[in-house]
Amino acid sequence: MKQAVEREVNLAAPDVDLARCLGSPALASPELVPVKVHRRSSAGDVVRAALTEGVTRLLRHDPGVRVGDDPEDVHQGRVATRRLRSDMRAFKSLLDQERAAPLRDELEWAADLLGAARDADVLLARLRGDADRLPERDAMAVAGILGRLADQRDRARVALRDGFRTDRYVGLIDGLVHFAQGPPLVGDCNQRATDVLPVLVAPTWKHLERAVDALSAPPRPEELHQVRIRAKRCRYACEAVAPAIGKDASRLASAVAKVQSVLGDHHDAYVADAWLREATPDLNTAQVLAAGELIALQMREAADLERVWVKAWKKASRKSLHRWLG
Image 1 (cartoon, one colour):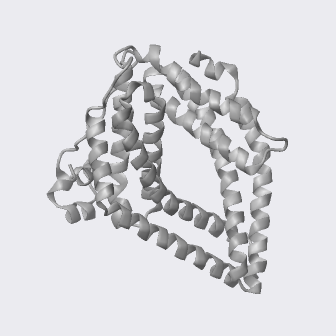
Image 2: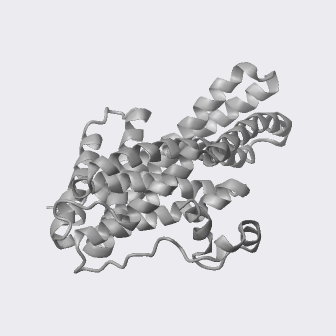
């Protein structure tokens, strides 16, 4: 089963360099076969499809995380771990928790590894873009700041690659493939998906609504971050059931994704602000001035996004979008 990581790189046309590196396993058949879902599918079929898609995504991008430096592989790996954990949470009543819970815990460990590298990539890309908006006279100072961040990103990548080489990670992949091949389904798994799944998705929407209702006036950054997390969980759940539920689930997923995206940018602005402030004591005078300019850009964008997200939420909260949840 250890070869599952290697086999999945050839789901379509294998990358020549990866195929040469991995040899014949790169040309072998995949261990996971996509599950087709339609309106008459059972709830269990939807669970199988979601788990298979999530594990396949992780396996597909695993080689890129190990041997490449494309931030997209790290991003997709992180998305895979998050979606899998979200699916296991949303479909909790349909899965044997004695087998599912340990995998969710291990996925959290893998997500943390991927997250550290991904967060550094996002922060570096953000500050590089903002640096282009500063006067030319700040170029040298900004280069010094970005160099510090690049070093942090490189350390996170090394830690990620080391983590992917451990027996713990190999065991996680082995467990995920087995789990996706034959999920331990329980409860109403044999019932029609359209009858079972809306009730399972509904709590993710209710939790999102409660998070919005609990916001202070004006909302604090950490509160909006919690709204973003709940929006992401609701989106993932809607997307997981959309092949069986149809356009109703897809429309809600799209609307909530906009809320998540806007608040994601808002959170990134505050993360950048915090990183720059923490770095300030170790910077020289010119770098401190440049950092101050970058901080001002973060706060300006955050203020703009605090207006934009309200509009996105009003669209997502229209009753017509979530009436199918019951």
